[in-house]
Image 1 (cartoon, one colour):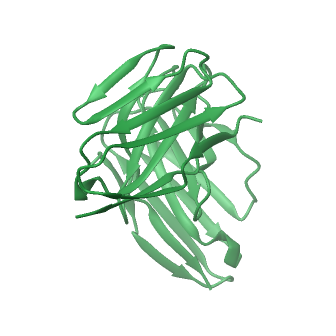
Image 2 (image 1 turned 90 degrees about the vertical axis):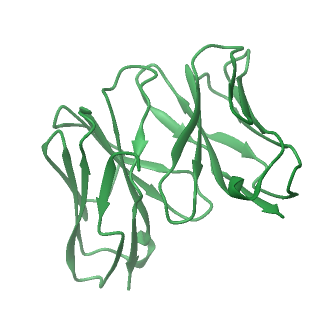
Amino acid sequence: ETGVTQTPRHLVMGMTNKKSLKCEQHLGHNAMYWYKQSAKKPLELMFVYNFKEQTENNSVPSRFSPECPNSSHLFLHLHTLQPEDSALYLCASSQNRDPGTEAFFGQGTRLTVV
Amino acid sequence: GQQLNQSPQSMFIQEGEDVSMNCTSSSIFNTWLWYKQDPGEGPVLLIALYKAGELTSNGRLTAQFGITRKDSFLNISASIPSDVGIYFCAGQRLNNDMRFGAGTRLTVKP
């Protein structure tokens, strides 16, 4: 238990569906992240939020829409996804964005797009 | 770019054997981190290294931050079945930008 909780753990959705992934941390951290993990590939950073403000968007398609209503919660809204978007989506948080700050990961949401 | 090359991709070892894996990059990093990911779980931090040349241990795990700041290795001594999983290296720059290796999948045979 790292203190970062993701729901749901598994999600199957059609290409025309709209769904949302949720991440919650009670560690008092100010920075939160979304990563995509595909088989045999490095973790890909998608979005970074620092003090509720989005500070990075690594060329992520607009069918992924993040939302950070407060420092403890992070959402990833999904719309019109493609089968190649199937992956493990990991949320992480860190105390801040200072150099050397450690990131703590949630258990991930295994997404399958059919 | 800042790609991390992690090797080996996979290892099959006997219980009790020692394990060594490493990460190299063409870029300099200010922090090196090693994570382990169990099946169905997110990565969990094992060791963090903050200075070039630093050698740090955590139980049976030992990791080093390369002198050139472009590489790091992780050793596991006397492996046990629960060491099974995927091990990731990560390099972090001053702006907190973190890059991950593709992972080393470790299988330990009892």
